[in-house]
Structure formats: structure tokens, C-alpha cells
Length: 420
Image (cartoon, rainbow, N blue to C red):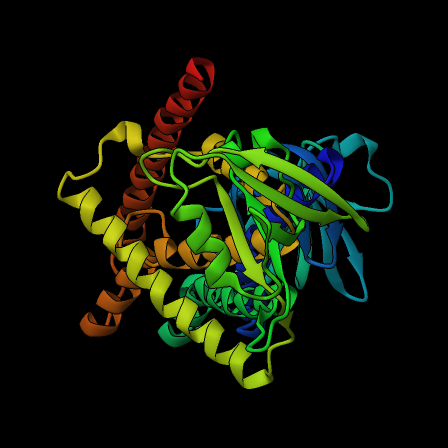
């Protein structure tokens, strides 16, 4: 891949991982009848924003995740109180717009002082209009407009906290599930792109070259077809090729490869200790069957899940140092290097990241999906929810700690890049 392709594929990969995770939350929240106020990719200041239907879709500055903001999860930022003067627009005998500022500039509205209102259950507003008390029904999708922003009201039956525990849990759990499904698909796709070794291969190719290795310095390139080594014709004898290299530690070897239809003669000396030259030889590949693809995807999911939890274990018991952890910068750096190896390798790496993202989000760490599911589980056992203010505080503190950790590991990433 060229540099532009690598950059585009890297950005697309991260966008896919985060977007699908958040789409899982979004889709099942909508299925449960919850009002989704915002679907965001990234955190921090908005770079792009567009509203479609009831939801605002935003792209934010910091590409370190995303979120789906549902009505009722957090205190609503716009409140209307009795005694407040405002203006309303009525259509078909129901209030569709409630204006809180710049009242003199509004046309076609009713202006008055709020005497009573209920924007969650009974959906009405009572105004004193020039000394007369008027009562208006409020449309369930009415907008409150203030400071140039519009916020849709959230009747009680559209709020996250008033849905059954099962529906709320599904809306939260769906995010990680989407990552697991994506990982399974990507592992299978990676095998389809790469293929499986043919049992009757008649050729040996160079499937990869280690950067700065003996082979790379000698001029070996990826996809070279091996013709002979030290005058011995290789054909499809993969084992013979490896044996000659390993037995020539510290001795010069002559390698003939076919590249773009032409024979290229190369000379190099395998490492005197290991007998290696830094290549990944492989035979011919064939297209895998559907059964092989599904089996490979399932096996890869199982194997990588074990590796990920082993990494968590080492981190908990101090077998990793903080400097060993990588943040967004290091992850991007590794992704770029893998993308240079080819689409199959990048697809496999994306599958690993998607699996990791799903597992990590299910950990019972405040602000993550796992913590929110834990609170829902406690609510199901107790028969009543935990104080929403206390739960919000736990998630807020957890989010702040995660952001602090992100800053530290990003700092380590940058220092590592400078040192290298």
C-alpha cells in the first residue's frame, strides 16, 4: 500500500470500529423507544454536526472513542420553571416550539408567564397571557429553543431510566456485541483475503520481509518467487528451502528469485547465531471453504480472547510497567506498520482491535459499558434503581480517570517516538 492508502485505511478502520460499537447502542435504544439526542464519534469540540430526525450526528476532535447520548441518562440542560416568561408556537392545537429568549424577535407566537407545566407526563403548559390563563397541550416532540440551540423534550416514556431493565441492558450490551460480531467477520475476511496453504503447492514465495533484516538489505522483496538456493532448484519444497538457510549460519548463500517475470540473483549471509535472514516464506494458497472460514474465525476469537485476558492478568499483577502500555499514538503507529504489509494483515489486526474493544468495554470500570451493566444488575436484584446522582458521579469520576490514563499513555507514546 502507498502512504495515502495506508492513511485512509487506518482512518477507515478506527472509524468502523467506533461507529459500529455506537450504532449497536443507538439501534437498540431506538428499538426500545428511547430518545437518542446525539450519536457522536470522538470527544471534545465538534468538527462537524448534522441533525436528522430526532438525533444529532457529530464528529468530534479527539478520535479516542464515541458515545450515544440518550434522554434521561444525564440531567437535561434546559429547564423551564413556573414564573418564567416565554413564547410558544402552537400548531394543530399543540405547542411545537417553546422559546426562552429573544422573545421580541419571534413572530406568530403566544407570549406569557408560565403558571404551571409538565413536559414529562401530562404534556401541558399553562400561561398567563395578558391576564388570561391559557392551557395548551404540548406535542411529545416539541422543541425548547434557547441560545440558538434546540432541545427536544423527552416525555417520561422516551427516557432511558424509565424503560424496563432488560431493554436498557440490551441497549448497553449491544455496543460490545457489535464489536464481537465485527471481529468474527473480519477474522473470516482476513482468511479469505490471504487464503490457506495449498496441500499440493509447486512454488515457494516470500510472503513478507522483516524491516532492516539481512534479506531486506540484500534486496529480497515481498512476493518474490524462489527459484533456487545455492544452485538447488526449490520448486514447491518449502522444507528444503528453510533447511538450507538454517544450515548456512554465517555462510554466504546465493538466492535466485523471479520478480515481475525476470530472474534476480541475490547474495546474503544468514545470521551466524540463529541462521535466519528475516523472511516469511510460504507456499501457494487456495481459497478456503465456508467451513474452514467459520472455523478459523471462531478459533481466532477464542485464541485472541485468551491472549487479551492474559494481558489483563499481567497488568493487574504488575507484570507490565506503565511504560509498556500503548495509547492512541502507539496503536496508530502499529496499525500503520501493519497496513503496509497488506490488506489481509490490516483486516486481521482490525479484528483483534474490535475484539479487544468489545472485551475492554465490558470490564466493570466506571464510565464503561460493563459498569453500567453492573448498576443495572444491582437494580434488577434490589428491585429499585441506585440514586441516579450517585451513579452519575461514579461514571464521571471513572471517565476522568480514564482520560487521565489516556493522557499519560499518550505522553509515553510521544516520548517513545522522540527517543526513537
